[in-house]
Length: 415
Image (cartoon, rainbow, N blue to C red; front, side, top):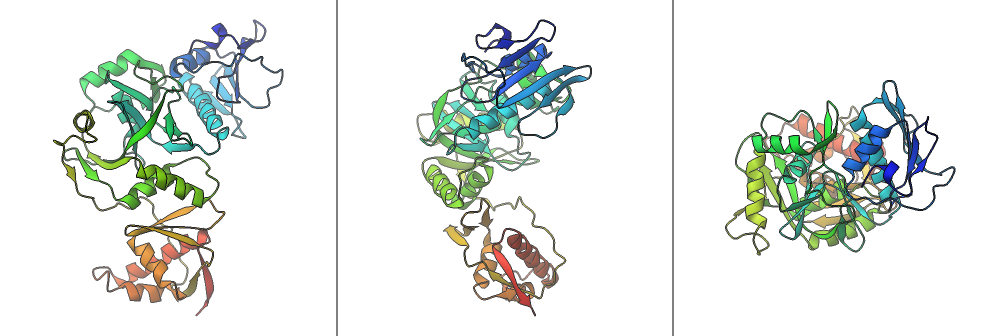
């Protein structure tokens, strides 16, 4: 992609205003750049081979994101936000535009998945990485651009079309700056060579190994990142319910109903390899990935796959000051699907899907007969002998409150 002023399809205002309007293919959104030539150049650097639509630009586009140059930097007005963002640097304004382009891409493709993940192709297989917040997926994607035989599809969101093909949008990975002291000298040198639009906090890594816009591949492997403070890198089997939980929770597109989301992602999970990647050192983890997936076998026989690790609870339930003697009952419309020792719970027509761990599933089972948090805690006490009764009652109350917020349980009456 070259700067819009050199591209057919870019419309221009008067020489004084230095206005250009740009529309990229595969989206309906127009980008109006007013006195923002630096952002125009930055977009050309950060978006690899995303072609421009050569159709004439309408006089008044129905959907457009606007970037204006100001004395304090740049201001952006997004179609998705009511208020403008002011005082942005070049990288910040570029990021705002790219976010709108990505959102528009998904809005115009109902039925596509938007998996919150990094992804790269290595040895003819597409590997996606997801996990809890701060697991390191963006840094991992940036680091993989250093590998000459790797093609990086994304560092944030991976589109997967209804036919199962994943698509690279050509967006360069965005790095948090400055780099941590723990990264290798070779990676620091790589970043210095290929760092594109940047500010004090972030920069786009415009390496030649970023996949061009429209590059396609079927997803082969999903790695759940588990970053630790110390310890060797290792691959572990992933419980099916935990893998499904991550796919459900990390999909950012609207699949209309929980039933559709559950069916779609269950089918995807059945067609890929899913593992947990435990690591503390980035370079060691990269070496492990190359060893594990660099041969003709699905996973190299020389790489040991450890057992399933205990699942970590990533979401805290709200605390409750409500009476532990409040009587609760199930919403009779709730639907439950089981996977292994866990279950997934939702209401038809509602977007929220609950991933029920052992405790939540036990509570749901006990609510076949309406009960209070105190009653349920007493019944569960045998299963949790090391937990104080007060703590257990409080945990049950908090979970019931959280379930009630999503309409899955209802207060029945006061005792």
